Length: 283
Image 1 (cartoon, helix red, strand yellow):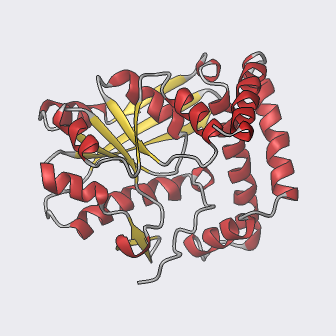
Image 2: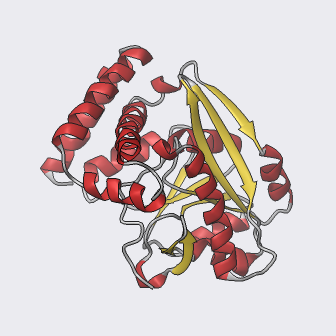
């Protein structure tokens, strides 16, 4: 590991210790200051996020777009600080679960579960719950270029029992999770370039990864979409929904879970990560 990467790991560990030593409300106040600094001083992808909101909600006034963007910065600043301070940030939280029967029914089929989510809500809380719930929950992740940050993030996410497979590792590892009746977690809402399939996302064609649909078609493993919505201070709601796979068609399957994700985003737009170039690739 490069020296700079080692320093990054040390600094993140130091931040974890410091954040874990203060109260949840103090961490929230710190997140507010962090969000304000980022919103007013860091231009990186800020205009992209604004443009994405305008594409998704063309009927909104400019004032509503700006207010939502401010809320996005605050929400993800809180998410980031909570993530750094895991497991301390889990103290006292309340989690309501809607649709757990879909997970239970899918598990009983013995084929594993192709689990899809997006960059929406408190996905680290979702990972915590699944890591504790399932005998085997494995998320497919992208390695960070900074190996120190990558090691820290992996260690944080594995605290509740979550396992990792990294992109570019043999795909057989992913199929093996399903063979063991485990939950294979996929984040399927980023631009997939020309390798993806185009489905409508907020009425606009968006290149979307087809891997989730292919895992189902090749194994018959049931598909479940899940998100974690922040309802209030210390209160979270998990929602699980079955994905319609009756057509056995990649486009139809991908469109169905994209529709579910869009419904959640429309209800809570400040909890979606609008900083991705979601509509970058054109049909």
